[in-house]
Image (tube, rainbow, N blue to C red; front, side, top):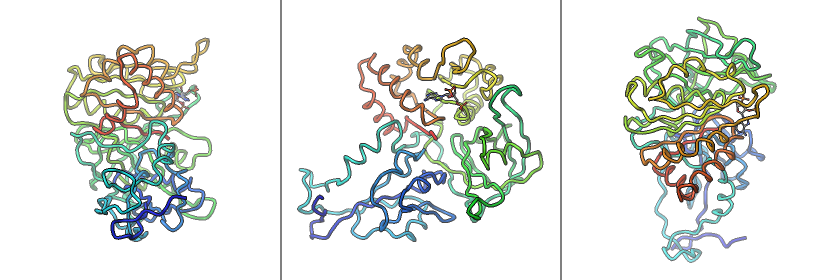
Length: 406
Ligand code: A2P
């Protein structure tokens, strides 16, 4: 056990685990994962109980946004009440280091740095919004105060014969404010109770429409929902009909956002319903930069063409705006192909866009694809003499690398 950290006055300094309320999308995965119930929530925020947290870090890799990855050196831990009241993280207080520091710069040693490095393996980690992104509104409606939306339409996106049922669901907020940006998520509260007799927690869905609505100026919001076997909320949503009322929380997420710079380029990698934010980005760019060369490249993986959401509309987006690589894993008589396989086939195009300082990378979909995509990036970065981890961390730091997987 390390000697306790102390400040210059000899007071003990603690390292407290916290959650960034601005970035958190309230999916409650961390709370469900924590083996000792050290994470809890109220209507507003998800918080960590300092007196319970044993720094096992099981919650770090499961967080889809990196909001779980906040730490402060403190002399007195922030209470649950403090954390529940936050709209954003407090700054790190100035603490002058004492004798337990080993750094030459007088900074406090980080007692769990090596543990964290382990938990950070993979493509997740602390995200930053693009420098030119519009400031996102978050948590406007919460568990205790959801907004009621009305279903404007519910359309099946996958062929009737396809083995996945993915739906495009359009919600109208009836004039109530719901300022959403492309890349944000909303929570949907299914009616009824769970097996423990408690109301269902909201389930998170990425918005698939641009900020000004499915049609410009309509300010409605669309979601891309896959019907999951035994999925309470996905079945509820997929069975909704026009005119039904739905309780919605959010919007959530302040980093997986679109740069407003018209010269920015996007490299989008997604599987299945991870295509939702990519649809929103593509439509937003079409509306703002038109069909001029928008510099967007997409790798999109699905089982078959008839189970790929938005297959028809996607194919109508001009190649000058969006270079599409649709990749299929279950084509009869063909080898399984994943997005990461195709990235390697298209290595020259990926290498070119990766080296452009205007490029933003977005990865959304199955958590399982992260490792494969990282390996593809590692090999492609080597082809132009760069270490992928250095490039990735630089891009993340500059708000140009965004991952949301589940
Ligand atoms: P698979 O045919 O092996 O399931 P889903 O339809 O379940 O939402 O998945 C979307 C696509 O993502 C499918 O083509 C699926 O292939 C693929 N996929 C599954 N696991 C991975 C992975 N580890 N890396 C990349 N793609 C994956």
